[in-house]
Amino acid sequence: MTITGAVLGDFARASFSLDLQGITLTAWASAAETDSVRFQNGTGGTIDLGSRALPVRT
Image 1: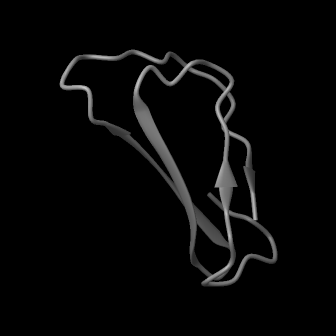
Image 2 (image 1 turned 90 degrees about the vertical axis):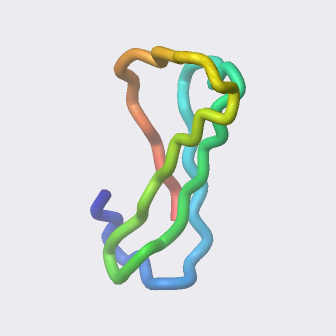
Image 3 (image 1 turned 45 degrees about the horizontal axis):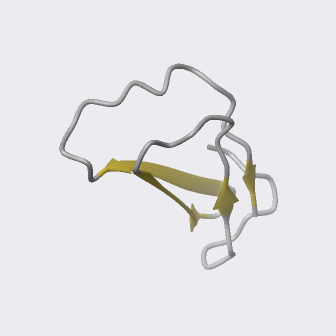
């Protein structure tokens, strides 16, 4: 996602408005003006989080 003023190496933090049910949420400044977010399901099961806002702060 585009984050104005973000530079590579900045700290990034993401949040989600629902229980992640075991999913790991990771955010990082991946390039100039760009943050990336990763949802990783380590539970082995199917999880449907639905559609929600994904706030990110850099």
